[in-house]
Length: 473
Image 1 (cartoon, rainbow, N blue to C red):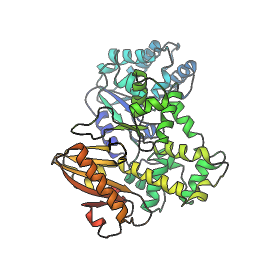
Image 2 (image 1 turned 180 degrees about the vertical axis):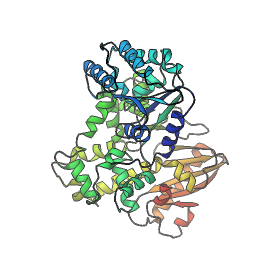
Image 3 (image 1 turned 135 degrees about the vertical axis):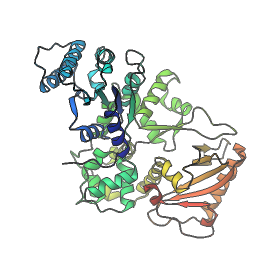
Image 4 (image 1 turned 90 degrees about the vertical axis):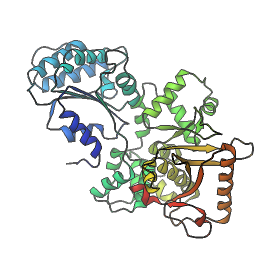
């Protein structure tokens, strides 16, 4: 039987909430396949008083039927209607018979967004259930969960109706970190190097379900070919399924994703509207916010003279999406595409961009390695605004102690050689940054590589040198 790996913080919080002396309403959200249901079932499997799950892509009649079946399975025997208010009243009657003083009464409603079909009354009925009954019983612990993260944020966490400010706790379940991914693989019999673990992460991200599909008797290349390039591979249709499960109309979201995938460094909002040929309005704001909430893109600031821009740059950060759009759509029926293209310039260049994203996903680990995890910081990117100057610095960590780490991120499978030409480019980028921003902070050139740098006079110009191992903290 599968066991829970990692998630120590989330496990402790769930147990704390369930053992509290008041009614709890907990909203758990995170991207598809990240392990939300598994977490709840593993931590609270012996304490669930009632559990029900919505049906992905199910019709309203099927969602109602699923709720009715769950009521029957947990012991409700009276006649049932198809009205959500009456079904929640039936749940109230069922739980009244199960309430015991001092014992948690745990209700788990999984895939909550599926129940709320267009024009439905599910959320209002849920609000009525919480406000008029559940919140009045200290034993009741209601957990709602959903993969459609944007829906969860908009309709539950930021609800403006009967559930406004009713949640007692929200929990965002993020993908695994590199260290958690390593622990997961090790516990499942994988004896891979950290470079292999990092390459796995750069392809699949820290998504537990994707990792569960890997086989420890195959190399990483064999696994990726089997999952992504073989006919009928288990991840060949995942891209479409992911976005259909998140959004009722996925088309405009996929258009944004496609543009961001084609621009690895990201796009400003103005650049995005021009490429999409759409108006810069509230619809675009909502779509970008939805994608951020779903852990698919990020918005980060750029450093301009004396101020940071409010718009920032939008960048696609979902590792699996980027891999799929870069390679899986161009594999030309080659079922060993990944194995056949290892070491090619295309794959090596892609790994370089993916390593940058890997670093950006592990800022806390980088700060710890720099021994600044106890210092207030902001991090952002910078682009030169001067015509003809293409200078860009992908990661800048500005510190409360008036120092700035200018991070150069370099990927290579062996030791990275910082040569004269690249060292001169780094100096020019640093000089452009200082001149154009007018910063009065001290500058600390910082080199982040996968396997360390060959030590020469140019590498010696870097104040700090970090490696992949530092991101496994």
